[in-house]
Image (cartoon, rainbow, N blue to C red; front, side, top):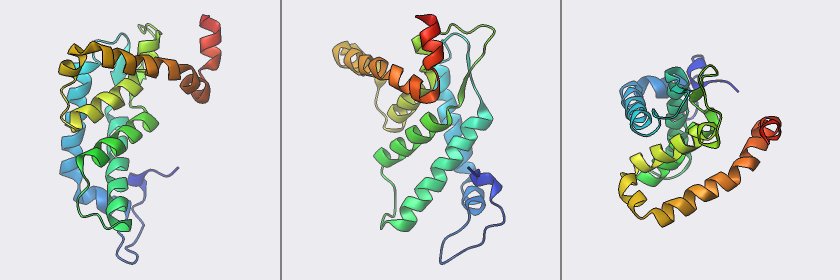
Length: 171
């Protein structure tokens, strides 16, 4: 798949602009969004053992987000994307591109570490919706059920991503 930042030769066609033009127009917003998502990582996931946030991969996810929002506005009669769409597109690209990397030398390969990108996507979605996660966690019954469902879906997620061998080895 071609990266949005590599399509500098595209031309305007019927009102559409190229991905490189979208990114050039939104450079300040992209940097601001990357800073916000980095802060979410620092506050929520930096305590995880053996994980790091790759800034280049994060920037690519944010660039894809802005290109998708542009497409949404172009093809649908939408002037401004609401916060729910912003959170959803952000979560989609973070979960797909996976900017959190596991460092092999000091990683504890438990379920929480292996799901770090999924947790990161959810935490970023909450941050964009301005949902106070610690306050939700005080009502821990809901949050425990939610994270339990995330953990139940993990084996299917791992199998799809090629982690089934790892899971079988650790059993």
